[in-house]
Image (cartoon, rainbow, N blue to C red; front, side):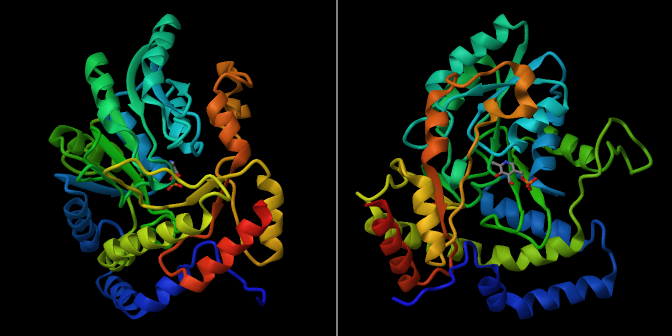
Length: 375
Ligand SMILES: Cc1ncc(COP(=O)(O)O)c(C=O)c1O
């Protein structure tokens, strides 16, 4: 086979398909000139809430701001503990620390790589022994796969904790007949360009069915506004999403479900080809991944990535270092060996090219290269 140049995520292919519609949408914004909180913002929020099946959707400046606004709405502060997975992007826990609260890291399920709910009660105990008030749990829908919401909800109810779903990778996923969005008290997602639903810059959104939390987050998003932005009733942030980004997202949302279905086909084709050669993703019964990433495990990960690179195939490592071992969290006192499952997975995991426009023969080309390198 001749060498190919595979893209990890093919945004140009998607753009080619909807470029004319996006151009028209942007033109409209340039014509009306309402660059901040223009009509496309409310139009997108309506479409997102409909898609997610939630009462409210509020767009904001990034996934990180979405998580921050949610924690601020719950009133998280110094002395509070928030329980989360150590196997995620820094932003999940960064927002806890930003508010002066303490992240308590939990290990992952060895099959799904999501927070292991069985370990959450011990984390609640640990937080209490440290003299902290356990306030909530942030599960992450890692690589697009929804976390174990049944078990997490039972634990959260028992201990009166909130659930903030970090769906920055999971939007578009499904949990036993329900779309990601309404599974916790608040759900946060990211529209970073490489996400399954991405804009052309930074962006994010929060989802909730709770009117009070939606009101508070709408206020926090615009500097804690009351009746208007010069009436400030709480400390907030500048967390708005530009009208132009909303205009772009409206066209991307229109094809999103179709793209998510394409991702299912591509993931299934990968798994069919790769099972036996590497550890392929495990999707529990009744769940749909948004397939933000197609991630596999192998003991010789680095050698395989090098071999793939030589064949024009990019592969990425999400994540090489779990959060409890990051320098930024050194003062929390975790050490190597504290969370063995995610430490082991972080040494073996790598992600293959994944996007809805990946051609069948490219999947064959990638899978053949992985199988050869993994032997
Ligand atoms: C799990 C997770 N949480 C939070 C974020 C933060 O999102 P953003 O980059 O839009 O701030 C990301 C994405 O980068 C993510 O993957």
